[in-house]
Image 1 (spheres, rainbow, N blue to C red):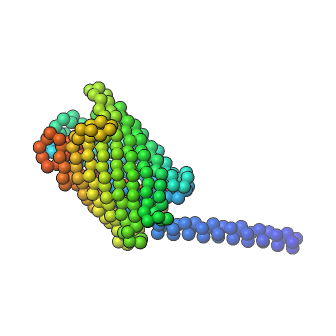
Image 2: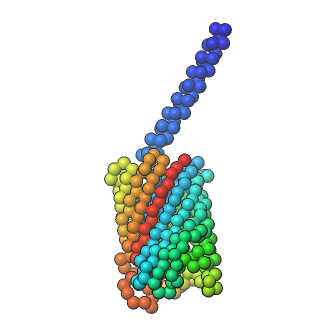
Image 3: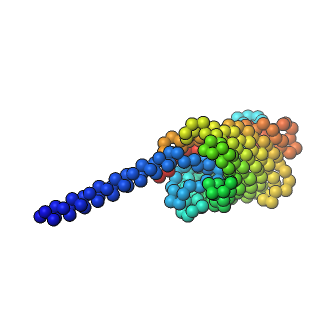
Length: 297
């Protein structure tokens, strides 16, 4: 009986030690999450190249609000609900669904409508070519094909296939304090209106730069600038219009494994081909806002 009690006590001690070790590991992971800096989220419309570690799983909600045309009332919101997972080192995959809202009234060439509807499906793949923590800078390639049944600009029913290709470079300028990013963008789109039968092929080219600084642990403020060009054809040819956007960005950790970010960009210069005015309010909007909320499991 004495030996049996000794064995039981040893087993209980081992189990307690194992549980304590697991709790310590969990606490360490929580502390690391609370202090780590992920450049994917700290900017705004411009994105950093970090993708996390193998096995990371994150649920994210992202809303892009666009409003302001030359005449009438215009507001469009595209909301993405996606699940981000890192199956392999340096690679992230992210399936998602899109919802859309359009409130349009009195805008030339756009039908009046007020609707909330399922917009389409999204899938994104990111591959980190260079890890900024092991090199002077980071470099990541994004590819995000999507199918949509509602036109993003007009809100009309359409069959659309499009993609977003981004090359993202980021760098830690001042250790743990100031970060910078550069994005090069190509977005081709093929669409057919279900209402008119009209077919269209177009592409958007762009570049964006951003700076973000940590003003207190887990809180970043910054600014960004983007230059976008709308072209006819998948291989960009005739220019339709161009726009230059600038605005502030804000990011904060809500907890060790959750975050929120918001960015506002205003069009300060631009031109639509064949139309008067100093801004391109035909192919783009006067204001764009991006809001993101995420939680890591």
